[in-house]
Amino acid sequence: MGEDDQRRRLAELEQRVAADNEARREAWWPSASSIEAFALKVLGAWELLKSDVNWAFFHAVGREGPPAKSDKLPATIRRVAEIYNIRWPHEEWSAACLQAGDVRHRLAHLLYVTKVDNDSPPPNRAMAFMRLGKPGEPRKRNKRPGELSFRDDVWSQQYSRLDAVSEHDLVQALKQIQWLDESCRYLQRFGEFLNGDDPWPDDYVVPSWERDLVRWWFDDWGEPETTELRAGQLRAVPLTQH
Image (tube, rainbow, N blue to C red; front, top):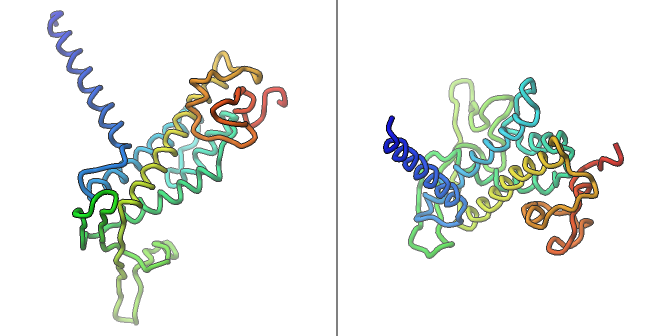
């Protein structure tokens, strides 16, 4: 392969990487050309979150570690925080995961769309759709689909219900998923700083540019903009207490 071919292939690779990075950044923008496109954006963001949590767990537990329970994201990421000995906002993360996951769950079980409003100005668009299940009841009962039941010895029935999602719902869900994902990614980052070959000591002052990357904050740390955050505060159990 000549030098010209190498340069051409390298340029093509750089273009693909740049395009992929731009697409990933755009995936978090809380806007879309239509309500349907916005719904797809939320579904994709949730899968991205799952993949990052599973990857974080895979890396933290090592080659011989157990598999992640991908349907239990809060418990999975909490285990990562425990392995890294990082103080983790479990309740806040779990609550955001539950709220965003509910929107994703409703969209993931969409059967067909019944009405779309793309005429209202953003963020007031909406979409109505049918999905399986009874209102207020779980999708599974005794390991069987909750929407299925017998009326008598002869007839069985399947329940479906009308649901709707607003653009406000999707904006909120996307922002929550982005916070969840960024928290996961920076958990890994600080896990390496605190547990790597040259771990930060407890009294190490976290540089301001690194402190500003922390996506969670505890009141006893002080003001986020002015606090001199130290490595020992990031740890669940400071090294001096081991």
